[in-house]
Image (cartoon, rainbow, N blue to C red; front, side, top):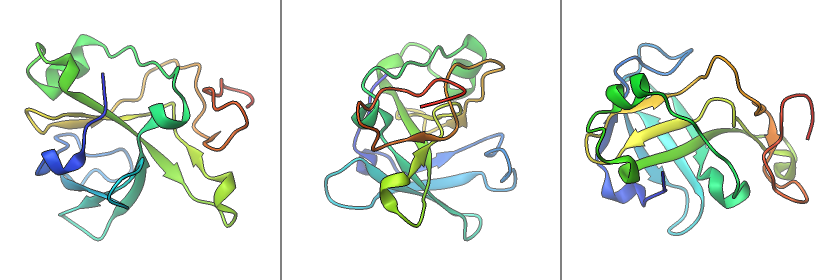
Length: 144
């Protein structure tokens, strides 16, 4: 799996929605800056806008084991290299304390433009991993 410039994609369809935002199905991804790891995931169905990021910039060893069921939802199982991974960020008053949800990444197929928020039944990752941590390695559940 890799990252790609969101400008290469038009809109993304989350057939099942995003948990907590089930009515929002169609989104666009817009970069916050010309270059950088931060993007807006803007719903075309409502005013919902989430801040997302390329997790590999902050957590180079981050890994996802995507089951076949999720690959089928994304479509074109042949194109794993076309899967783009993002994580949803939670902003804090002090931006240095911003956290990433490594437990439930957003995965987009750049060819089919289908997206999912993959929530595994078990994960060693945290939903609140500080992105500016000293060593920038994925936080395991229970600590940084």
